[in-house]
Image (cartoon, rainbow, N blue to C red):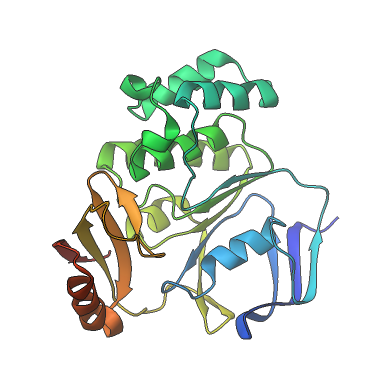
Length: 263
């Protein structure tokens, strides 16, 4: 049997008339850890969703060596009107995972004081951790990570790196989209840049991306690309559109509290 766990043949995905993934043919090997790199909107998240079967191809074919089970962590993990501990213990029951493992992961990711907090009241960073915990408590054949713990504190990232590398040693296949060089260097065997819908080996220079942070204002309509992080909203903006975006934020009444280049 071939070592190829997932095979793409002329895989194509079109959204709204735009070809996001363009006739990609590639074999992904069992046990590899793959990082997808590139600017915002280049197709990294689309590639992850195609590989895990969450969306269908517009053209081409995708083949699996066997029926695979995926653990998927989206970039934006949705909050719900349920306490964090109730959500995680519910997932543990579904996965037949011991409660002690859940408690250990909560402690490892420094969420012990938030177990009774409703998930829709958690910050973006804490929700990211919950998403990672639910994937790590019962890892399957493939773990899929969309911008995992992006911008998180160093201690949480170190815990995450240690645990994912332990899964790699157990032969779990990892697919990850990521901007952060540290996570790419410490977690991936191979890196592919998605450039104009094509899969290009290695990390290639991408357009500079900036994080723009504004103060929360319940009187203003949240922009679609904004995410909530504590008492601030933040969004990623390309260098080409930075000036225009900043001017539009001011015009709409937002108070800008920080702009920094995204690593």
